Image 1 (cartoon, rainbow, N blue to C red):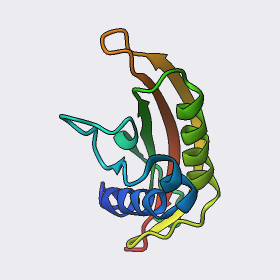
Image 2: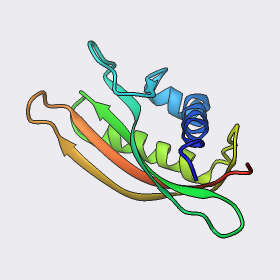
Image 3: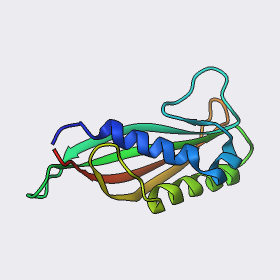
Image 4: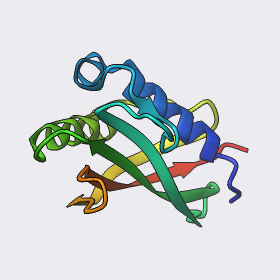
Length: 137
């Protein structure tokens, strides 16, 4: 298996988050495919790093993508960030995501870590998901 499905997977995840009306009512257009720089919105969602390992099943090539999605807020407390993180998790684990190449076999939540940044007081929730993908080529 190659890294060939990574872009298709990222596009599907980003599109699903950006298209969800409940999430956009919470963060507006503040869904990014990288951590923003400069002046940032009070609350935002960003796709983060991923680790990919080959996971062929004998009938088709495949891979496991362990990917991170982050919610950051400069608002007080964790409640708003946890509500956004919960919505992100619901979208990614319950929506039928379609890839432009290959197939998403499964996307599941793995873990999360919530913490306060002592340098700027922001709150950050990093969530990790595992996507199992196969390719038809």
